[in-house]
Length: 401
Image (tube, rainbow, N blue to C red; front, side):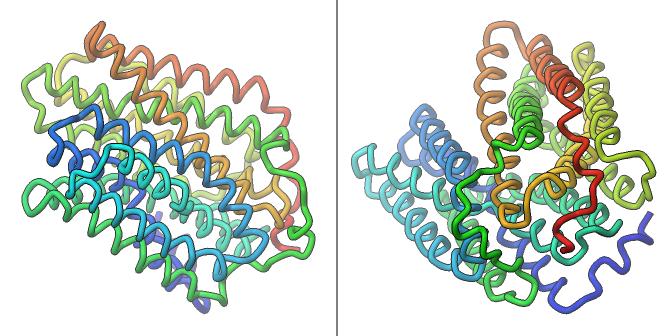
């Protein structure tokens, strides 16, 4: 299984941008919970903390495609530095506003700017892989590796920010997230050798990838998948609390992500002969079936095993989705196209967290898992029903031209 990954990092500058991308991506799993921990500790209001975190998440979801378009038009090395500086200043302003008990609106304004200037680092890293390995089998392996990196970030980030904010200082979690963001982004911007070239047509392009039928379809599928992720995260915490083992919630969620990590490594090591479209549809089906058992489980430790198995189809679905995006979107709009996928997931997570919370309070955690299963079933129906729009990726990848 390790074999296909051995030669993946051979080449000038590859290891450098991979490391920079990992560091720069850490804040995406730290900001939300870090904001909640800081503001709730200083204001004793979870309502305000949650509202500010939601504002930040929505601003990122809206801003990611726009910043992706700027990256496609002017290049990563020109766009990243000003965004990194503004993002750092906005995050510092958020911490100062909370610490000095400034009017509540200052929290929302600074949170809005933080979200709007947070770049989709994963999209920029995947765009680099598309330039290096576009049109070859190694791109599949590279996207599999990036999916595993995402899972590592989402396993370690929340745990790290929680320990820093609760055991050291309420500000420390966001301070470390700020450092990760700034160092990672500046290092990524410095890697000019591996950044995607700026295509002349991108400077005057008026189109947007979301108008491509296949990208619109993928965005709808990932909106539903995001609802699964957001609801499972919240419901699982409540599930553990209901059974008197709230401290095990982190372990349960780590099991969910761990299954995705393992499957991502395996999936990326395989030389698949079936088409991307069929891989995507089959992975979606396995994803929905894998979630079915969690509706009937009442024991926390059995739930951990079930969540681990349920996570198996996450990475394969994300890997094939990004591969399809790389085939569907013109090179001049590649970063923006991938950012739309991240945006759809982000909106879905917000919807899932809201719905999961309401349903958990009304019907209990175990019953609320039905929403997660329903969202997964919706993703399957949309994916299968519109799979005809995904036939185009079988043409040679334009990223190689």
